[in-house]
Amino acid sequence: MIKTVLVTGGAGYIGSHICVELLDDDYEVIVVDNLSNSSEESLNRVEQITGKSLTFYQMDVCNEQDLTTVFKAHHIDAVIHLAGLKAVGESCEKPLLYYQNNLMASLTLFEVMQDFNVNNLVFSSSATVYGDPATVPITEDFPLSTTNPYGRTKLMIEEMLMDLVAASTDLNVVTLRYFNPVGAHESGLIGEDPNGIPNNLLPYIAQVAIGKLAKVSVFGGDYATKDGTGVRDYIHVVDLAKGHLKALQAMTNPKNKASEHYRAYNLGTGCGYSVLEMIDAFKQVSAKEIPYQIVARRSGDIAECYAEAILANQQLDWIAQKTLVDMVTDSWRWQTANPDGYHTTTSS
Image (cartoon, rainbow, N blue to C red):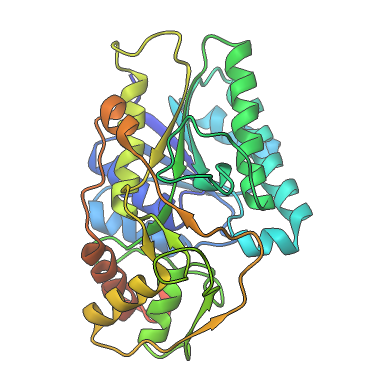
C-alpha cells in the first residue's frame, strides 16, 4: 500500500497542484525542490487549501548526499518525479544545461531509490517525445523522436526507465506524457508563476490582459493549421494532477498484470486549440483586449499536437473533466488575485 509519496519539483506549477490532490486523498507528502523556478510560498498555500501539512526539503535532486538524507528520514513508498528544467526555447539555446540538469537529477534519484528499495515511480514526461507527428491525434504507440533538447531529455529518461524495468521485476513505473498544462486551482491561491517573461502561452496572455506585457507574440502564422497558428492540446492542471493519483492507485491494483512494469499514458483532452483560439477565449472570459503580433516561428516548435487519451481512461480510469472555459477562467482568477505571482501579499 502506498502511503508516503516523495514529489520532486513539488513546489512548481504542476507539483503544487499534485500536492493538493495527494493531501486531499490522505497521502503523506514529502517535497524536494531547489526553488530554481518555484517558490516555497506555493507550498504554504497548498497547506492553506488542504488544511494539512507536508514536509519540505529545499535541495537539489542532483545532490546524492542530500537526497539520501531524505530517504533515510522517511519510509517512502512511491516517488512522483517532476524536477527538471522545462522550457523548449531555452533548451535549444542551452542544451548542455538541460542535459546536465535533467539527466543527472533523474540518474541520482533512480540510484537512491534503488539503494532504499523504493520501487514505485510516476515519471513526468511530455508529448514532446512524439517529435513532429505524422498524424494527429497521437496515441501511445506512435514512434518516439524529438525536435528539441528538452524533449530529448524526457525521451532519454523514459529509455533509462525501460532499461531499469527490464533489469528488475520489482520496479513499477508509470510514465505520464503531458500535453499542455494550463489553468490554476479554483481557489486562486496556486497557479503558474514563471520567472521573468513567461515561456508558456496562457500565462503570457494573462499578463497581457492584466497590463504587465504589451502584446502576445504568436510564433508562426503560416503553419498548415486551421488559422496558420500552432495547435496544442491544453489540459487543466487539476485534471493533470488527478492523473497522478490514478497512476499511484494503478500500481497497487491487483488487476494489473505483473508483466506490465512499465506503462506510458497520454494525459490530454483529445482536442486541439490554436493560439488565436486561445487568445479569443481569454478575451471573452476577461473582457480585455489582447493585442498580438505574429512573428517568426520558434525553433523546436511543431504545427499540431493533440492527444488520444483513451488508454488512460481504460487502464487508469482517468479522463479530463474541465473545459476550455474552466482553464481560461481559472487562469484569469489566479492572475488577477496574484498579479505578481507568489510575491503578491495574501491574507491568511
